[in-house]
Amino acid sequence: MSQVRKQVLTRSSLACLSCRSRHQKCDAKKPKCTRCGEADRQCQYTKSRRGANSARQDNPRRHQIPNTPNQLDDYMSALITPPEMEGPATVSVLPCSSPAQGLTSKRSPLTDRREVCSRRGSANLDCDTFGKDALLEAYYQNFHKFHPMVLPRLHLATFLDNLSWRPRLEPLLAVLRLLGTIYLRHEWSTSLQNDVESKMECLAKADPIRVQCHLLYSAALFWQDQKSKSQNEMGKAVEIALQLKMFERDFASTHSDQNPILAECWRRTWWMVYVFDAFYAGTLGSMGFSVVHVDATADLPCDEAQYESGDIPEPNTLREWDCREFDQEDKPFSSFACLVGAIRCATLARDSSLKSDSRKNPNDILHVADSMLDSWILLLPKSKKQVMLRNGDIDELLFQAHHLIHVVMIGFHRPLSDLKFNAVEDISSCARDPAPDGPTPEHINVHTVRVLRAVESQIRLLALPSRPFNHTPFCTCMISEGTLALLSACKFLLRGNELAIARDQIRLTIGCLKNLGALWPRVARNVSQIQTIAKHVLGIETHNSAADKGASASASGSAHSAASACGENESSCEMASLSNSDIFSTIQDFDDICGWYDIGELDPALPFWSANQEASVEKQ
Image (cartoon, rainbow, N blue to C red):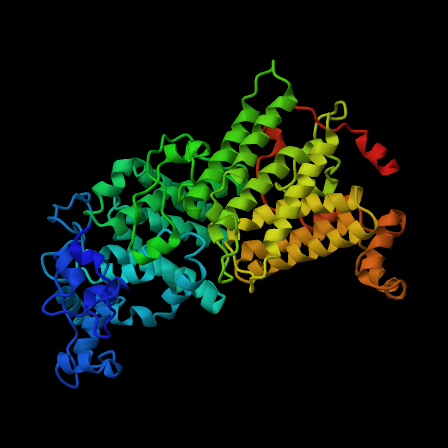
């Protein structure tokens, strides 16, 4: 360490622009501060609007942000400019088919900024008004944290300053605005949708930014209930990502012009393709996980705070993740890496059940799957044990990862548990196919407890004190799966106070889904269908019947006691006039709430509960 570094840097109110952009202390020495001199980079100061810089340095309290137009441009540009890369500039290696080559420019960012901002006649987003674009702001405040793939807000503004990047980013900005309007105005904008599609046509076919556009546009379409078009967009994202070989480790460095933020962005883009593909496969069931067997060598993403700040560390690798149990100290794996690891664990567990050896005990196969899922939870880094952060925010990527692990556990164990399937569930892909007849599964109580604990873990995640309830719509299917299992527990297993608690938990899950349904039509439709199933499974009367018995219910005390009484005497709560066929006809448009690992795909050698098990349970 140099002698300069050993000295304690005193903070000056007149920090240079370079230190301000890095949020570092600056001693304000002239002509270069200590940090800039040590890093051998340009050191600039804002001009004083009241006099010389020396006067302001003598009186730190008089320091103010400049407010003249030119000074403010320079000041804001410095604040959002990422740290400069040390060493010689390299030739851009972006694809030749890209509209422009590379981010690095021989001119300074301030020069490019003035030239770009001087084009006031353009109808496109102006860099000075980036922060004033309400739709972009809505995207970054509401959706970006769920799937943090595109450049962080301030870094994206910096890339817009570059004339060669601006045309490439306009289609992406159109997609971000489309998502932003959903949160800001609670509506789908056809005009913005048309803008997205027209601008994407102008983007080069082999541009990796296209992958980001197709991914986010696919999600917006899917939860707006435009399933077919969404699948088409997702297919394009996968196709381009595979053609460009974004899954290879060298892609990020080769296509970043030595800009660490851009390299991180490309790594995240590939892994978001992986995550979205898995989420669609789980949600729809019928869609294959097309990239699951790609031999990916791309490094894992860093933590969100590092991505936002631009301080990108040396990335972790998949090999390090797979060997994490041998580390003496926890490696700093990011939440994004934990989500990728959760999907890989779930996929391996599923494959172990599909490709089982007929000579092995079926129970041993499930034990192998359980060990994979449990190991993910047990080996979480210490810094990732808590889903809620100290400031009260939810770590959204960990939130998704935990829900994924729990819903896979439910899918594996519910067919072997006391939580039997209801006939009305057959109309939903959330429900499992009826299990084949056979002997009562061994260790049935173990399977039941496994399901109930997974559901309980989901409930705890949903009950975290973070309001309003705002998470990715992809968690809809996972919550629905747990709700169906909990409904079965209410029907066949729980009684008394336990039943009353479970009913409150069902209210919580449906309430959470309704909040998501206020934004996403597909979720709203699924909520209505879950409510219909719940009424049938719990034996809740139709509107007219419920009105006739309203007085007796209120006389019995609280809603909890009424629920308990209903559980203890099921015959009094059976629907008198609504048959299974009536239920089916009322929700004939029921369409795949969730399809996480249909039991029909599992090895037929696995034991399942027998057809006469229901009768034995009801007698208990």
